[in-house]
Image (cartoon, rainbow, N blue to C red; front, top):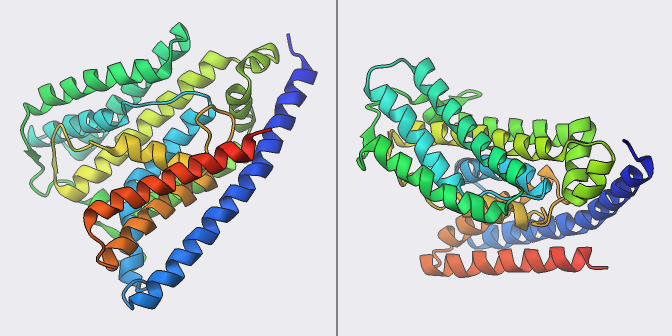
Length: 326
């Protein structure tokens, strides 16, 4: 049974949150401009084309993962198994390359592995209604163990068999393929969330699942779908990463889960669901990457990077909380 008044109420709440999000987005953009101006004054190398390309190539991996994580967070869920899932996908594809299979089979197997892992996450969370944090934390260990079994706890060298996704460049050799994929997916998801029925319903599910259910939305289905889509994104990053590195192992995805969550949260995506934009996630991962790049250019000691990045994440969370506090 559809209850239009509940649907309208959810839409109004979501719209209100989007307006508040715009303020945070503007603050992040101003922060980026300040960092760019400050760093370019102290270093002539910062605004060089090669450094800008290098910056975006570095953020492409966590950026694509942040896009998938944004979908999950919008639905009111979370996934802590992204890093080990990435390692498993990488090891599966690498093993098939080493066994002499062609690129189509190896790539398809990697994508299928990611889809299955994401689907398992989504199925358990949507059917049991258990806490996603605990479920994905447990599955994190499962996928890591599977990655160890697949790789034999060894480094799997691709022997230059698969370099296109990670090393090839387009537009006259200027732009790496990974950057093009990241920007394309960002635009695609932004359009889907803004204009499609899927996007509107996803916001409703994350904002108020009970009201969304009463309005006729299949809440478990949407939670399942976002985890499955995220699994594909994770597999795609795994393929790009092993293509660039030329190898895979059970630790290749270590830390990427937290990077994805941090980028989305810094960009204004709420951990409680129903609030956030792809643009915010894009800006969030860009800001984190920009800070790291600027600190490297300014020759700041590496351990300071963690302090600065942590402060930025905490500040963004506080800003998001204040912005949504009634």
